[in-house]
Length: 87
Image (cartoon, rainbow, N blue to C red; front, side):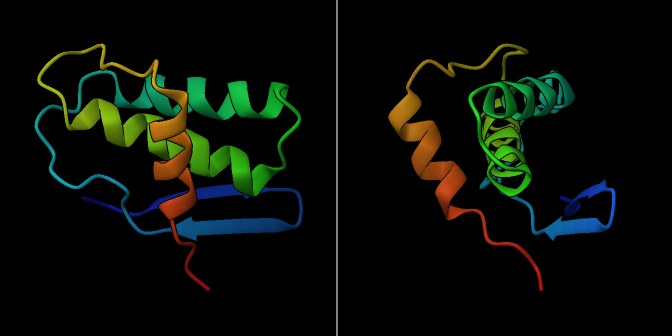
């Protein structure tokens, strides 16, 4: 899986892939965007929001269904916190 990149005014964040096992990529982009926007609306900074988006996308690609189970906020937060950014 490819690494993720987020860019903004004066900043660029690169990350390694967050998924453990890719099963189906359907819905991954939607999950990434939804996780990112939800975090931003929740008051998180860009880095935390990218982490949340990557976590949501990684759960989605590990599922055989287009809509993965994302309702376990604690598990999603743990996955987001495990994302390490490239320097």
